[in-house]
Image 1 (cartoon, rainbow, N blue to C red):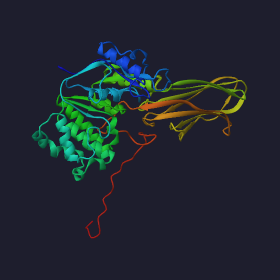
Image 2: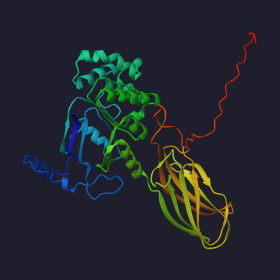
Image 3: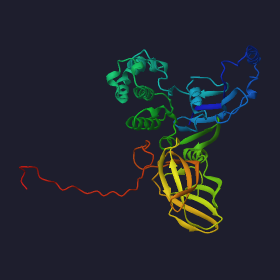
Image 4: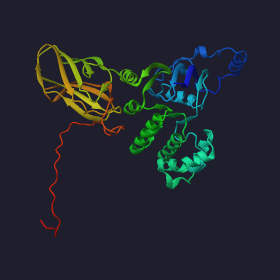
Length: 423
């Protein structure tokens, strides 16, 4: 099988807050180095792209020493946290920008769907932009004519196809852009998280179309935070972390590694004491595997305390909140008498109750069910992920929780004859 894309020592460097190096002398120094065939002197002081940490240099690597090979007909998922360098890599692959060092070898025509509106001229109509994109891909007019009706039908914006796209909503932009990119038969299709703008029905159509493109032997590169969609579509994966490749391989192992690295923490020592009770720690695990929990597995919470004196009734409470602090629900233990010693309050959240969201956890220790002894906010954040699902629907289920095991009873209704109908 031939190679569709090969990246060799690709790096992308940015100067924060400046255009160029910031001074004329630095620009001249860089120019002289380039003319003499030397390395850019300012690459040596570039820092890793960790957006959560303040740096000492105004030069940062968005991508650093990226090496990979993608075979023709492969489907590759590129995943990572926000700021990991995914979109920068796709822009380099799409030739929107060039790497600072290294090179990319690409065999075949590339169609990309990156940001909303990329590749569209706002003053041209939807139909004119279809021809513009086809011409950019090197297609002849008659080839585009043969695909035109199919593109318009797939996009679902037929009524507005003669309207300048500057008047389109973001959803209409994405619908038409994806239809153009997928139907003009590129050898390589690159799709960014922009599909999240579309509605659930259109997302399903897009994923189905990308599977068709993959089945035709063309190469698909897909970036998304929807792990269900990534695992459904892609065979291999690349995990980016702070602008570098942390792992590449089969998609299951890459997603699993990303899941474990994305959680804030799965255990935290607290050590807050009040009236002879010390709240020692909170632990979260799914079947003993600490880290990001799978929502189709039981989630175990363990609140550990130490008592110095006798207490008549003590209970533990864990609050599940949204990241912005809105309460979702509260898990409360029953009150129990405690003597001096260590105690663990253990609660099991059943599988398929939580959604694939981030939850911020607070902990409270209550005496006699009426008085809070200890209350600690934002003890930890945990994130649920869904790695497998039955059925064709691959989108995200709405809601902060999604109890899937509620008992339902289905009865067939008795047919009641209408008036005048013989019984």
